[in-house]
Image 1 (cartoon, rainbow, N blue to C red):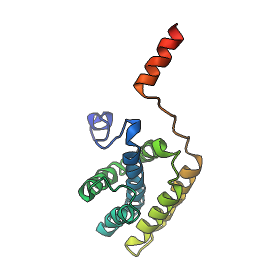
Image 2 (image 1 turned 60 degrees about the horizontal axis):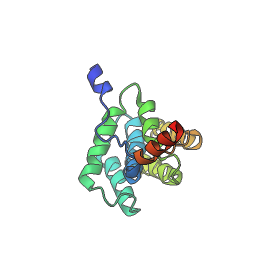
Image 3 (image 1 turned 180 degrees about the vertical axis):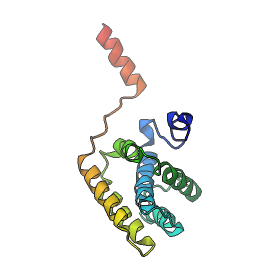
Image 4 (image 1 turned 90 degrees about the vertical axis):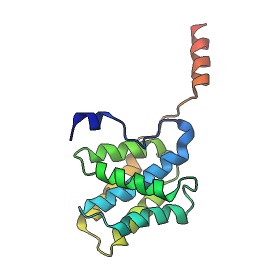
Amino acid sequence: MSDAKHSNPIAIEITEPSSLNEQAAVALVIVGALVAVADRQVSPVERDEVVRFIRDRKLAPHIPDDRLYAMFDELAERLEEPDFANVVIDHLRPVSDLPLSSHLIELSERVAAADEDVHPHEVQAIKLLRLLTLVLPRAKQVAPRAVRAEQRIAAEE
């Protein structure tokens, strides 16, 4: 893999605080992708389970299915790289203040069972996700630019 690929942000990276719903969808997809790649055999039923889970719970109604599938494919590929843990953490951190933990764990378990063969590495991935949801540093609140500018002006006066 080239350094250029690693230096460019993932195309689905969300950087604006107003896109919290989108960040939550990405967090759900990355959890499903992590479990799916854990056994080195990503099954279409695992991918379908991620999208079905998000749809059934109306967790990202504004994102079309084809975009969720594309997110899954891209993140699953990215999770095969040596720095996969950083990728997972970077996508979970922005939503660490949201009450998503139960959804993340339930989704990970459903993806592991989707192909009717729960591999020991999938179990390890679920354990890792449980730990991450407990200890992940909380997201820092980011003030809008206008508020930051006002704070800077007030500090200068």
